[in-house]
Image 1 (cartoon, rainbow, N blue to C red):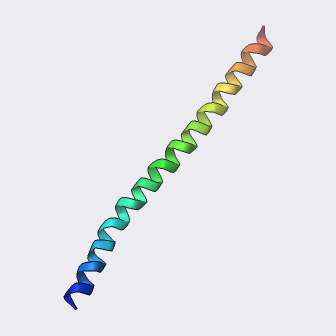
Image 2: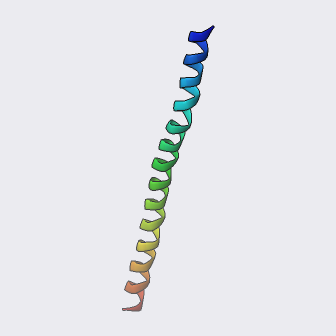
Amino acid sequence: MGLIFKNNSRKIFYLPIGLMGVVIILERGISRQLDRKNILKKIKSHQKVK
């Protein structure tokens, strides 16, 4: 009984850390894509002006 509880508590403890890692990685990827799109739009708008 005690061993099962310890294993479950460890899993519950590590799960939020894993989720936060995944969220941070996804957030970085999405922000990079948005930044690229914004930069490309700026470049295209500058090319049209010239």
